[in-house]
Image (tube, rainbow, N blue to C red):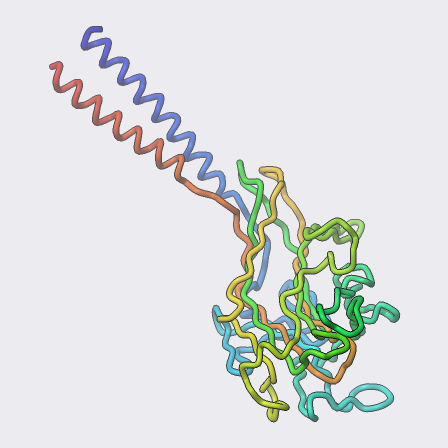
Length: 328
């Protein structure tokens, strides 16, 4: 092969690889088309009474710090409690938590009883049995927990995938505090949960992403239940407001991450993400869920292939220059 023909061949190869590299980069760049309408995931704006994209019910608000636990990002965190305002119940006045007031928003928790209004379940679009999760192993009376009341929040958001994207991740930081513990008859009591699923605004229906079996508890993912094993505070009972008996803070729990898979590239999906805390069996002890730094991002995106192509392009260009210099 002549030097001229060799030069032309190398030039063709270089040009071809260049096109491949640029195409790869275009594909990578198209992944930047991933978009999400999620709003106020750091809770720097208030969310009391359904403000700033969050739809709340019960005792839900934002707080800079509680029981010595500060936000993981920014100045505020969401706080969701089962705290009832003392004396505000109809009939017999409530006087929970040794007479202390752990309520933060001025709104009382709402009914979560499967045999009553189940207002908390209805708020999320759940079935009445959504909170009827199994009792702890070793409980005297087996079966499911009896949800009584609770508070929670959700946000509807849209995810648009880029070319080649079939999944996304949602992550958040959380902490759990409680004045409840474990009983011999019922095991662990109060619990914090989160939920995620497709939401159809036309039919007003929620389809959980966790399970399709229809069994109690499949609509939610339990984050933590009250127990006497997370006693960091060491006080019995709590003696000041915000001083919980049991505490599991952000450093203990870290960041919860969940991956949604099996989606179609380029499509837009409507999701609902929710968080809440539920009183179980009795009503006299407050439990609280803290949430911060919620994010939704494309999953498993890497520019490795495109960068490899660019590296090959540079290598071929150098080879071409060396070959041309040697034969002239």
